[in-house]
Amino acid sequence: MTKNLHTEMNVMESVRDIQFLHVESMLAVAQKRWTFIYDKQGVELHCLKELHDIKRLEFLSRHFLLVAGSNTGFLHYLDTSIGKMVKSFRTNEGPTDVMAQNPYNAIVCTGNSRGVVSMWSPNSQKPLVQMLAHKAPVQGIAVHHSGKYMTTTGMDGFLRVWDLRTQRQTHAYRLPRPASNVVISQKGVVACSMGSMVHLYKDVNSGTMTEPYMVYNAKGLVSDMKFCPYEDVLGVGHTDGFVSMLVPGCGDPNFDAYFDNPYESAAQRKEREIRQLLDKIQPEMISLNPSDINRVNIRALENKIEMRQKVLYQKPDEVKVTVRHRMRGRSAAKSKMQRLQGVKRDRKKDYIQEKKTAEKEFLGLHGGDEKAEKFPAPKSVLARFKTKSS
Image 1: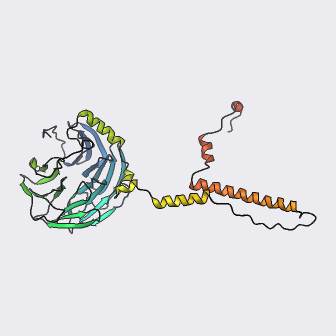
Image 2 (image 1 turned 45 degrees about the vertical axis):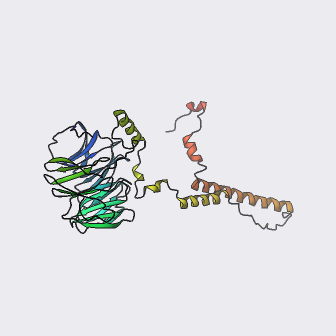
C-alpha cells in the first residue's frame, strides 16, 4: 500500500524464485542450493534442505502446501504448518522451468520443452491432464482466479487462451515476438513480457483483441511480473531493478474484508491465521473438480441400502423336510414332529450365524472380538497369587 522498503539483504548466491506464505511476514526463497524461509525483516527462520536445487515455487494457501519444482525434474509438496513432506515424485519432464497454480482447485500446471502443459495433484504421481499447448517449448502459464481460463505463451510466438472446463483452445493470437512471461489480473488483463518490452492486452477471452492495450519499455530484460490484487498496479522486475506501473482497470475495486483485507491490523492478521489453520483443507481433497467433495455418491449409497435390505430383512428359507419312516414303533406322530423340529432348529442356527457374519462384513456390527480387546474382563482378586507362565 505504501511501497516502502521493508528489508534488503544479500544471500550471496542466485535467487531463482520467491513466494509469500499464508501471511505477508513470511516468504520462501528458492536459492541455488537450498530453499530458505525468511521473515519480512530478513531473518532466516528455516532452511529446507529437502527442497534442493529448486527452480519454481508455488504456495497453496488453503492447503498450506509449498509446491516446489526442481532442476532434476522432481515435484515436491511440503506442508508448511507441520513441516512435513506430503509428496515427492519425479515428473519425467525434465527441469521445471514454467509452473503456475489454479487458484480454483489448487491444481499445479507445469510446462515442458515439448510444448505440453501438465496438471498435477499430490494424490497421483502421473499428470491428471496433459494438453499439447504449443509446437515449441512453453514459456509462460497463467490461470485466471476463477479457474475457467488459462493463457499460455511459447517459443512459437503465440498467445493461446484455453477453456479449462472443456480443456480446449478458445483463441490464439500472434505476438510480435515470443513472450517469456505471462500473468492475468483480476479483471482479465493479460501482460506479456518480450525482452525489455511489456505488452498488456484486454478482451483476450472474447476474441476481439487486435492491438495491445498498453506498451511499456523497461530499462532491462524483464525477468518476472505480478499484478497487485485490488489495485491497478503491475509490478515488473528486470535486470536493472523494479518498477510499479499503473494499469487502469486491471484490479478488482471491491474486496471482501472477511477473506482479503488490505487494511487489517495485527490482531486481525493473527485471527485470520488461526482461522486459516482451523479451516485447512487436506491434500487428499485436491482434484480437478472440487465440487465432487460435497456430492453424494448415489451409486454407492444405493448399493449400501440394497445390501442392508438383503442382510436385515431377508426371511429364512422355508424348511421342507420329508421325515423318513422308521420301524419298531419309531414312526409315531410325536417322534416325527420331534425330528422335524430338530432339523428346523439346526437350519435356524445356521441362518443366524450367516446373518451375523454378513452384518459384521457389510455393516460392521457384532464386533465382539474388538470390544473384548478394547474392554478386557476385570481381573479377579486372587489373580495376584497365580504363577506367571514362562
